[in-house]
Length: 224
Image 1 (cartoon, helix red, strand yellow):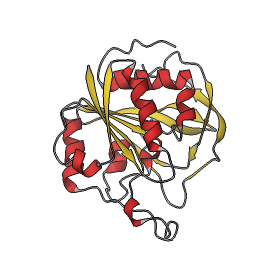
Image 2 (spheres, helix red, strand yellow):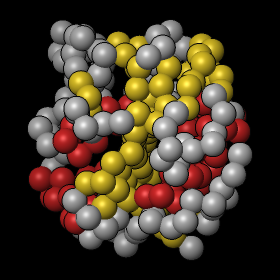
Image 3 (cartoon, helix red, strand yellow):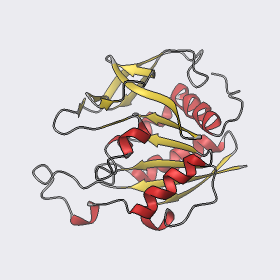
Image 4 (cartoon, rainbow, N blue to C red):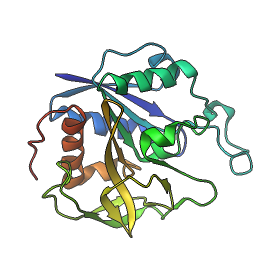
């Protein structure tokens, strides 16, 4: 059984619930997850895992927008933690990044190059939480053969996305999901997952199960 470390926690979202839903989804393809909100501690030394998941909102936050937010949510990713993530990829590990991962670690200039894109204040935005249609496209193993689907979620728009990113799913013409090799490892970003309703959709769950297998460099055998 593969081991997964889910880095969780932050404001504006029920990360405890979505991390649990994600862990349950990945368990269906033999991935055992440990969930922690101690990101600094968890990445102080290389964890003995094959997969690391970022399902968190930990960032410096623009002061003019979030002046009233509790200081506990202001976060700077230590150098040791950055090195751990990069070493994990150097060793062929997988990195699954959900929803707010595009806003995370905004004091680390290298993070967008790892993820493939990032939130850019004040340009980036999201739709109100509600029903949205997701279009699945491409022949990548994570997306191939999956039907389009409807889900209750937010759609991030106008992210800064690297030119080499090829979306596997989109909504309103905005890229939602992409997968890419980074160093000797693999990274997949899924902008969905605001709350547990996103995980209620079976096609989204199938996409995530496939994502885990692809990140682990295993045959993607999950069918819709």
